Amino acid sequence: MHIAWEQFTPWTALGGGVLIGLSAAILILLNGRIAGISGIVGGLLLPVKEGWSWRLAFIFGLFAAPWLWQIFSPLPSMQFDAGWTPIIWAGVLVGVGTRYGAGCTSGHGVCGIARLSPRSMIATACFMLAGFFTVALIRHVL
Image (cartoon, rainbow, N blue to C red; front, side, top):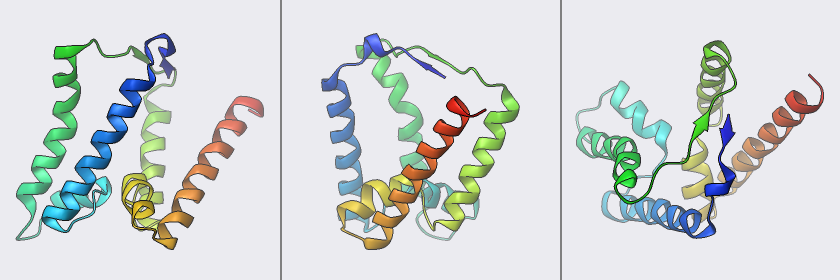
């Protein structure tokens, strides 16, 4: 994947972080739910009697946000240097890790750390270390 760093500005990154934090805070304050994407999507894939409407609205917002952003500014260009096979395997591995870790990076990293959850702090450290190791292995060993 190639990221157009010349389009990066700290203000848009700060704004995005504030919006993520605000949406997580609103969700927990108004619904009492954690903004963990794997749990939200899991609740849609294995439907429960209640809670599907807010889950659907949250996922819709995730997909609608880039299109709304384009109204104000062009999206940065992205290029994936991998084929479909590694991308699919990466998705499968992320899904397996999410199940073993009892949550995803958004649930543990954003919401769990904000709640000072020791389990989330350990999970986030493991996510980060696994990412560092994978990048080092792929770029410098393979």
